[in-house]
Length: 379
Image (cartoon, rainbow, N blue to C red; front, side, top):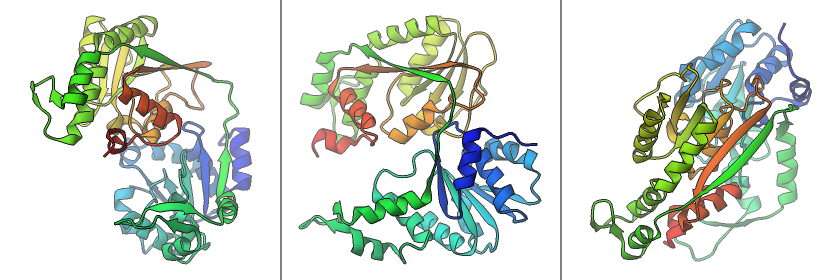
């Protein structure tokens, strides 16, 4: 018998064809979706469209095994086009990937016309345009053009369409309420989040920003795109930040550390070796398992490792540098925030300087939006 938490049972009672199950990372959306399929879509073939990482890690196979479905097909969003002609089945779309108007959205809309479906997401949408494909799939609008004509006012005198504002938002709110099913975990796990303020080399920072000079290679900065990268290198490679990391590692013997760039990884490796920590890594080139010793660090690059895996053998994550992406940060936090975590308190440490670029990134994340380099540089 599959045991469900009260909040999961409550969510199933509210769920329906075409809904978005909205729950924080770690609330058990996968299990809830599968239980919903058993109760309300019984006898249908199950198709699960998820991230490539979750497909390859067999996470969904593990979740689905106790339910004993007759047919379960698990594949990634990259292959969604293969299932456009499936009819009369039940689809679980894992993670919100149906934004914009690209190939994935087109395949999604073709599938939803011929099958029952639900979508799982911790971050279903930041703006109304993120909901357009789901609204169309639910029959609220015939197509994107109808939505835009009814709700979108564009800025005048622009070289390309830029949304100025939305109108009749009361209708959009009503439609969102119809499709969103919230699932809030009723857990007693406490989260302690602490910002660790670090110093940075103001002289080097000004040299890069004002003089457009690469202080690492001692030459002019020719590419605007490299400017922010160099500013972050100065901030993130400062000795004060490294010392702050060492202090945290003295107090926490098992730690996941998230970072952005390869120079940061080299620093993290060196610190771990000096302090005699066992090292595990997940980045674009290496994917080792989480260590199982008494003293370890697991070094994770945001793009490669912010989603698609879980860890309940540590209670601590250190964000050595911040991601530009609010979603990546949220997903990264969720790696240890699981319903089956044995810890009563989870610790999150965010290393941050008072440099303008660090403050701007932190501000964007606090406002639940992505950091934009061009806006920061006034381009």
